[in-house]
Image 1: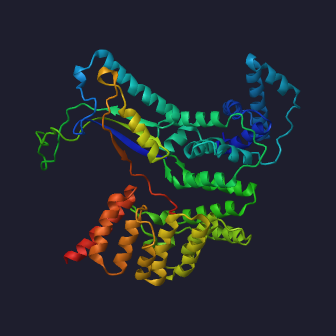
Image 2: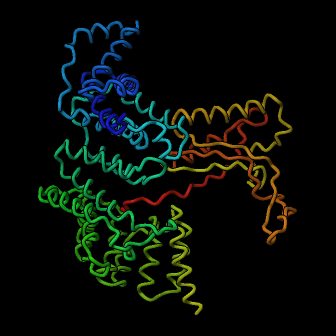
Length: 381
Length: 135
């Protein structure tokens, strides 16, 4: 029984049913029934055309359910008049599922859950486990999301930016439990990039590949953070970097710059440097300028201050930092770093301590605490 | 999504507006209070925001390592007025604003006279995993 095959077929079969006009929740139920049937029948009698088999069984299950429901009599008449399903087409029906799952009427967390379920083909248990919430909670999140999108028609292309935002969120969740959400996000974004030709989809895919390439080097064996400059670059995944760079270059050549392409360009410049010292900080500052222009996001200006500090020295970095809102998360950490580079160790230690108290996650807090401890130890000598 | 811990305190928190010890409530008032919290948790499960809720006994034991091969010391210090935690609820919500909103709702559980307790709740964010892409 090939579970990977079933998982990869689920979204396209679901997409076919939705395209035929079946309500999303009913289509999902029918596909789940068909999957159960497949698990029962396939080991002894594998189908020649698994996708066609699943589509036919799901379609029959839907008809059975519709017939059994007297209150749906009218709809039954409606489906009976429709032509019998032909062979499953090669058109990518999954695409509309992306837009359905990323519908703006859903909260980001619901959109993420629904995407992983309907497009990713993950089980509710797997998604719940990845997000560290009880299965019952995740089941409710998903069924609420299904109710929200029920009755929406998907004959119009949706908003690509919303879909990309959802995939970005999935990627950033990292991984826990038996599903690697970063790898899952890459798989889904790859699928999306194959289905639609859009420079920002390519930009996001490149960004994910470039960041994923550094994953092995980002943490020490004890789980602590390893900053970019100290990472063992031989542990970066060069194949993933090469693929990311290639995808990015093709996207940039289209001359429709967006924030994901700009972010990917920064990641590519880091990935490209043989050593931290050889990083092209001047170009990175230029990309941050583009990014600031595209998004107006204050966090971009904070990161830009770091890049300026590397390109033109810590004094210039501090000057750039002075124009940034000091209530931003990680502002204090950046200030600490720039003051340390500027030789003001006592002030840097104080700021690191303060930054550690504000850190949003454990790995960052421990890292910043160690920085403070390191400078304090130097001061005692 | 971000997870938050809502902490209820037996003692230590500032006094609630409707500050009558539970032992002086009527049984019906206690039932109403408990039911309110059950309904609240059930509603959060429905919205996909519920993670966990547990009640804690008022008396705990302080334990300390006291050297190799020696039994741990357990007689003190004793919590008398500060930080005695009655129980918790963990929620997983889209924003800090939503967490504050829910904490406010939980604080409105009915107490003596069927009126909201206006109990103080401590709201603490969980330290999460670091994001892979840092914007």
